[in-house]
Length: 414
Image (cartoon, rainbow, N blue to C red; front, top):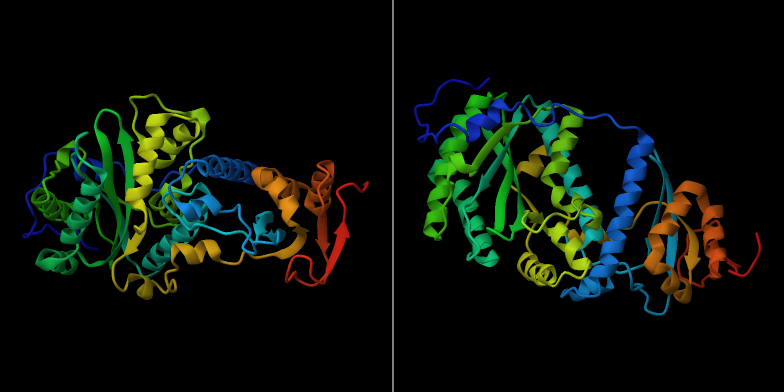
């Protein structure tokens, strides 16, 4: 186990930075147990919120692909298909045959799918580290800011500073000294009406051996030294003992790894309900800003447009070279690949174009009906609204209106 004192340690910040974080104990150590039905109810609630928020966002978004996401069929003259699968967690339903935007930063629906895959990948890497006898810590690096700083300039400075942390002779020495295997990085954003934009890095640092909290803290001090110098060159700065630095060991067990993986990918899990709207003086995440924008707040809409323009095309989660290959978690999928991936399950009900137009704004209700009551519940849901549909016969559906379909009218009786 690595834990001896270091001759190469950079000057330490005052108490209250990484040292305080290490004293807080490993991340993921304390988990609250919840019942499966509570988890499923919460999942359906998050889905309904995400679908509703996307629908409202499509009225003012600046991203053309997002305007069509989950709304416009891939086949412009066709409809969509209700698909159902049985899983270990219960019945799952979804809609196949619509366009997707693949935005991890701006689309409430695509962000959830992308984050779920990213969290799975991060958990896979951490599991491989644990099995190899290694360890990991969560490093957070922030930068000082004010209302005059632009989001674009801040993001450019952050990217340059992270590049300085993970390159050059200092990084090579750190890898050898601390046994660093690699890193996984994501960027988190909040905005405050008092201090403006705020960006910071969350990075999972993986080690080849069991590494003490003190050693992880030493490593973080050295990383912060390079971070601070690079920010200064870009006209920014950071103060370690005022929140600029945090390093916490990760508890390397199964449930804890999943929790930390979701935390690293949490930008996509933060679809906020307007019912939890924050006060005007509070910091808000991007999706909390969106929640206020969807309620018609003009300042939030303008801030959201800025967020869309600045985050567009940027990667949400990045890995050090070779780490994924070492962990054998497979090739990294792009955001578009994740959202365009064919959902598992069987085609059950074909929804013609006119029916889909009537259904698309309340599709979450239809999916809930299917998951709770099966296909009979979906049929009742459609018939109660006088909508036409077609049951798919035993073989998979190839095209809307093609062979293998059994017609049903919305006007038919039970």
